[in-house]
Length: 490
RNA sequence: CGGGACGUAGCUCAGCCUGGUCAGAGCGCCGCGUUUGGGACGCGGAAGCCGGAGGUUCGAAUCCUCUCGUCCCGACCA
Image (tube, rainbow, N blue to C red):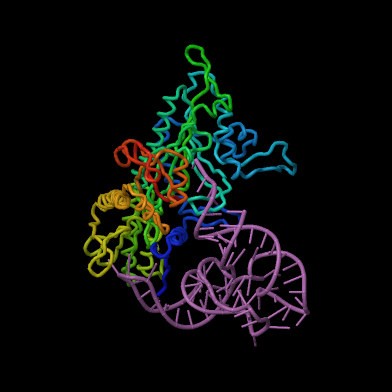
């Protein structure tokens, strides 16, 4: 029996993660370049779907795309003290070009606040130029010491929004607005619930006044920071002399924001939904929505079955779906089923002589209950109005994945008040989403991390996590205004 | 960057300790035939200068040094 076996999650979670990626042909380690990945067509198609959906949300909130150089003069980084301190250790630096040593070294952008700040100062003169709302889709490079495919690679693809505003109120509003755009995207498109919150000072972006984030629950109990939105205050405005004149003729520095999400989202997608059979994709991000497997014995059967399969495919394509008819010869249907399931295709249709007879097709969702014989449940769909039925199944599947992910997170979310229980929850590499009181000091935050490996993922925003109630810090016993979210993280 | 493991065919690995018919297996791939409603079978075939560079030796996949890369743990990480 020829089988391709994905390591089960229970055996070795990180091996499972890598197997899912390999068998779904999403990406692989470049190997020839340390810490970098090659995103293969199927993986890149997912990223393109993420981009398209998110980009529309950015446009809808008034942002425009632009593109800035990949190389940034080192002197730019140095203009914002905290920023350079935060990023210096992970910079890749270009020292030679055109066969000559460069007079001023460039770094390959780890993020673009600095070079965009430079151009903001050129482009912004008046309050009439504000707000300036830009976004850039690009690659960045951070020389990470330990990489994990999609989750932390030296080079990654992302989008970075950069905006400038006349007042702090306005820029803070933008920071929250874009965080909400991320949260909505995760829920509606990725079928992944997130906790919105504020980072502790320790976890803040280098050079920001405040960092907001979305934190997603992964199947092993760990948290994945899936997006951030920064209140940059006037820090970069001052560093790059980005000034504007207001209606009264007064000059002031602009208030800036930046916000980003990256190909890490593909990793989040995998760890939120996939199973031991491989990739599971929400229909809204699936490069292939439907795989049709024709089934036949004799040539006459094949002719009729394949013809009908192709006709159904055309009908579904007219509804905007991407459909594959798998009429490859010499591969048994079962093998095809496993292959499409590994690749995360949400819905499979099987069509054979029996179906032609009954004017139905058998449908099987990527995640299905098992019947009494231990086989995945399949549902017969009438060929008439097949588009309506397929559309409904895909919509339900999108919803199902969200509900399942939410339920899993809720099952593994606890409020804890005893230090012993807190320690036990994170013992032996385990993790959950734990809401506990914290006294707000960095010393306590680090002490907790030292003892448990759990970090403060965020201080939840209103509406996220338990309702605020005062209490005592889980570690120090000092007063605390509200519970914060603890988890191990990626 | 510290500790550990590893790198041999597209993939997973055996061989290395005890240098010399060790260039091997399974899967995958190609061809032909029989198959096809949950991972088919038979026969035939292609495919690797053993990660790279030096060194030891009559002789290196095997021993030594360096180097590149991957995985795990840690530190680091908007």
